[in-house]
Length: 207
Image (cartoon, rainbow, N blue to C red):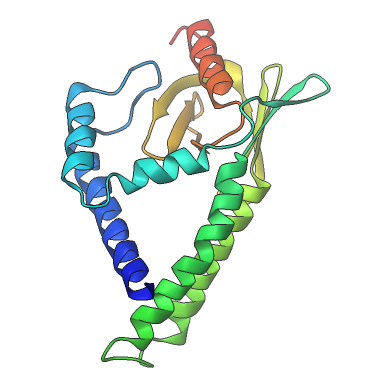
């Protein structure tokens, strides 16, 4: 049973990697107002049929999107947090990722030769991902938007300077008149409200 789970995990990770690489070639970031292109829809459908484990990325996306669907309000501000499915789903997934890495190390011919720094890097990355999704907050109060960045700091943006909002594989990328950019993850409470708000703001700004 354990070997089956490990094999399933290897295949799933491999298929996610293939989908990510091929998907990036088929479509790049697109305007937030555009729907998925024909080639992208065909690719996703064909990939799901041919893959022995279905579409792992889509399945994980369904799990990560679970939870509260509405944004929170704090006074006059609207607060968007990471969805519960993303936060708790990652906590459940992380031990499997660690066990998978340990199995690869102990079951290989070079066991014990992996540099300690590599373990520290992988461990640090896993911890960072967990902290980021639990700390993440995007707050909109009037024309002011504050957002948690990848450095776990909070940056403020003037929404009247928003000139571009693009859909990426991981969420959205916003670009402002001064050249600053910010990436917003996909699995958020109030996701649909945020998307509609960004589209309306772009139209108000004449873009």
